Amino acid sequence: MRAVDHRAGPYAEFEAFVAGAAGRLLHVAILLTGDAESARRLLAGALARTYADWRRLRGDDPYDFTRQELCAAFARTGWRHHGGTGLLARLSPLERLVLVLRVYEGVADEVAAAQLGLPVERVRVLCNRAVAAMRSREAA
Amino acid sequence: MSGFPDRKETEVRQALEAPYPVIPPGLAAGAAARGARIMRRRRALRRLGWALLLAAATAFTVWASLTRPWSVPPSGISPPLEGW
Image (cartoon, rainbow over all chains, first blue to last red; front, side, top):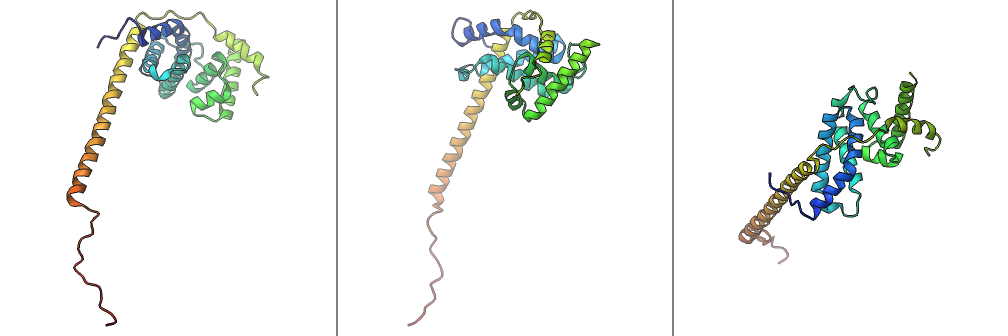
């Protein structure tokens, strides 16, 4: 492992970004996967790609980029995260993804649909279904 | 627009809210090391691509200058002789 420049420049910016944003991103990842270890792995991969694209990110929000990478990685491996023990264990991986993006992260329907490669209508349906499932769970 | 189910969504959002988990130590350093590895791999791939392109262009130039495919080979057949 070659040493990364720890003094200044991109690494310092990246470290500051991680210090500020990793907590929330890790919470998002835990909501998605339902367990801390795979959430940590998912976040580590997304952050690595953010660092690799750090220079090209100028002007873009690194938080958005990392969340997008996180969600894409979760969508690729979502079938591994069926069930589980987390708060959203009863939802399917796709429903969790839509619920977290739309409701917890406050991403607009259209943006979430574009990021997930789904029609907007389907995102709305999935979101409503997930919200209904969550509320019935709370009521029970 | 998604205006009307706001109350329900707010309830669910509150259920999802929680204090942020503790960041595992070395997360930034590990991610940066992995990111640097990705960058090196991309750079190597880009170099390989350019090298291949350059090699192909050179090979084509050499081949073209040797065989001159644009020059028409001298025809061995004379045109039909008509109207003399």
